[in-house]
Length: 100
Length: 152
Image (cartoon, rainbow over all chains, first blue to last red; front, side, top):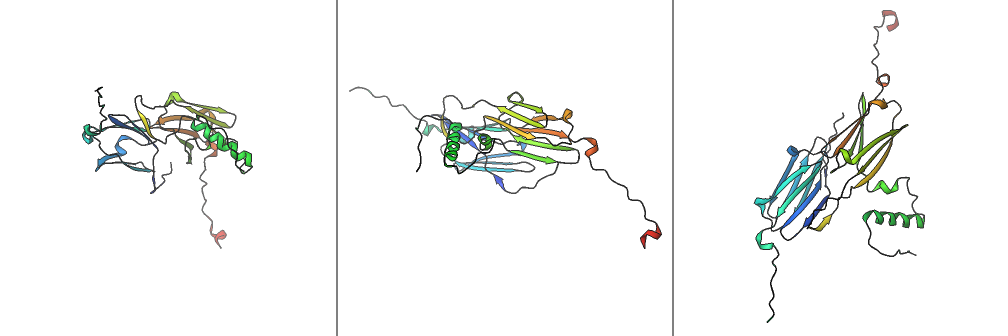
């Protein structure tokens, strides 16, 4: 097959979800295999890079207060799922109110 | 001048229909036959080499069981349907991904061998190979050596 050279990067589509303890992010990366992926979390920014033989994906997000040591990622059927647990500080606390 | 429709909870799909209806109302845009799939449809890439036409469709999240491929006469129809994968116990922060359902109809070239169409899935890419009939492959024609007289 003809190899196409494409320098322009594609901004992949994402879904981001959140609850009290974590973020979950789903990214469409059709045609990307695990060894073509580069995920980094640095200075409150999550950076996604993927380069296949004919495509380059790139996207960067500002996601603060993430426990960076606990970030995990899984690539399945062209979708990248990233779990980003929040740091203890931002986890919502329920404040009990007593009747005085 | 603008006509408003009553607002009610809608899915993304309905919103597109609404747009379409508005366009039709004003006569600004004659919808294409498969307009509904235009914005929601997956990216399709067609390539070709000497032996094969190749169709590559981006269907992230879909697997073999979500897609059906049928050939009828000279039309290749690819249908896909996937489940929403919103995780439980989470709220939506941002939602851009939309591929849940699609239908693509592609006219097949005449010179392909329909019985040997093959498809496979890899990393959310569906690849369909349509082998060309042998007689359609370009033949190399030998050039015979020219004799002295003809050269002049």
